[in-house]
Image 1: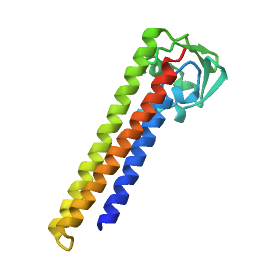
Image 2: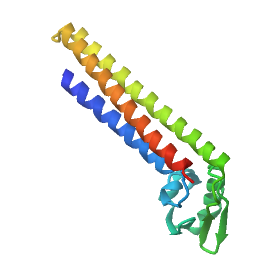
Image 3: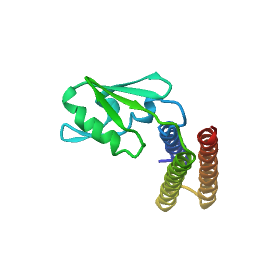
Length: 186
């Protein structure tokens, strides 16, 4: 592996981490119902944990309502239980072959809870980026120990890894600020 390969791989992993945080943020609700709010809720079905989007169709027929239609009606109870235990403050109502979720108006306290959830998600993203930095620096040190790469090149590469880390952490913080503003806007 070369220094360029280590830097490229590190940047790719950090970009994936940023995308993951942004996707997680889309699951935190503001005032409008979107399928992404519940699509990653984990449901115990067929003897394992599965995402809701793998078990059902999710639609938003109205701005504050979600409709879930399981592919297999035998999973209806498991889906209902999974949504209730997800901590989203939603109460599923079973209506025939559908599960209806009406999103209540957000209170100030609930908005603050969502901000805390987003801050936790962003912190997890920052930790993941720092872990990528640590792995990259370990890979660079391995290159140095294997020989063929000068110490100056390794130092320059470590500086580059730190710049990548700082940049991605700043991007995650920007995404957090935008989401926080979105949540707190009444």
